[in-house]
Length: 484
Image 1 (cartoon, rainbow, N blue to C red):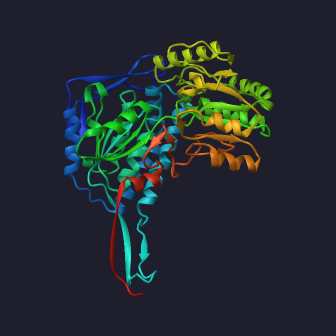
Image 2: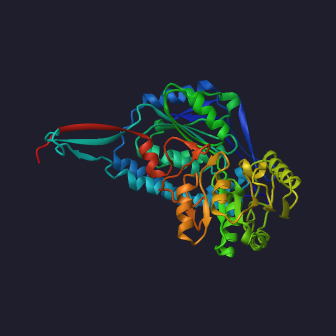
Image 3: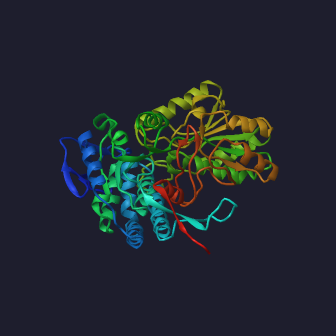
């Protein structure tokens, strides 16, 4: 079956900027990572197009009531649920992810928009009585949250082309903000399809412009525009640090890379731990910032555990992304697959053993189990954004496990397999991460809960609908006499 089955190439010659169609001289081709077929073309924006988008957004003053925003958000959720297979096909075609992963993402987006809709109609103010000390008065202080004065600049990556965009747009719309969105040039079509759903749901087009292009043509326009009040970016550490240094005096929300461990202690249910390890490392072709990137297994159980990991990895089918029986599709491009291949080879040269895997075929990199991996080799010390399942054998000492886990520059999330409460207390207290999941993969969360990391994994407010809505607003405080 061709991975582009049921997908006709989408050729877009103009961008929609504040409801106006704007043409560009050049276009970007989007190709399927599995077979190289053309998925579509999108306009290649230049800095002047970005400037036009921000100017138009700043000029528009949103006046949607909470009820109107709630209706738009919930209608978007319903339309996404109705069209989830259409979106799944587009996700698979653009990313090379398997059908199961594409359908999961298309289904998951419903929660983002539905949760944002529910939170929109909740009063977000607080009240402080002022007569609580001898210095007080008979007054009350009230707070209310108001939209940003400027525009939200949202920049999104390839690995979750629907859900990651949803996590930027839904909280922004819920708080009556205007947005200029730049999806990655690798997977822009899903974001554009989502924008069309939003317009259909009733969003004023002036509140959302989508510009497509790449840094070579757009430069730093998305992060330096004078009308950008906040830059929210999800992507690589390199680009995130560039934004931090370049964006200037504006708010920044940077969700960057991860090198997330799954820790397996001596008391763990090894079959359950192996299931989590394999699923956590290979779901979405391993292309999640919260994927299992390192498995830290103590020596006492490492032999038995590694056998179970291999047994479960062998059950996974890698191949044609549109085949419903495929478990792992491609990574985003052949260049990435070659990098993962070289990192595995480097680990082997340093003493690691490949226990399971297949030869790379273009961008198709099958699940690969590597045991006895040195904790400081590039495969596990850097972020390997693919379906590698690397096992690091650790001393039977929780202090050493924690030291090894904390030894990289990243600090996003973690998973821990143990039933000992004293271990759990130490991991929660001492792991240098944003999240500690006990008996779950590092990536487990709901769309409402706070999400984000420390160290090189992130900077600024957390994501998750609740925290993002707070981060996309300014708190205004006011007071008045109050005698009761």
